[in-house]
Image (cartoon, rainbow, N blue to C red):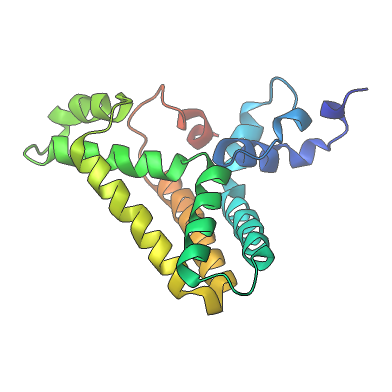
Length: 187
């Protein structure tokens, strides 16, 4: 019996959520093929993934020497955040900025194909790059300023962001039937 079969099937949705939203090595505990039902249920675990990430980042913060300057701690926390998530949140943010800039003159669903094409394009435009730099700088400054309340800050932003993603995906019609989250939302 391999390690993939030693995990309870009830944990598959959590492991799928962790595999999608992080770079944590959890795929080894999942079967090569999982059910659409498990994939759909994984959406419900997004806030739990945020909590796991917050706790991991808090542990990293606790391991820093007491003499670590808050800006340096902010840089380390945000860097670890990016590494743990594979920059998924930053990629989505940059894509959204590019799509918003591409659609700023257009209204209505007639321009949806243009927006979807921009979202699929792996290249980032100058507005996306500028916005991403500002986002990362803002996160570093906020983490530096919140050092006294770092656990609360991490839990709030990481759990809230994933909870809002869950609410958004459940309450909003999905545009691309072949998109990454189409199957998740369907089930």
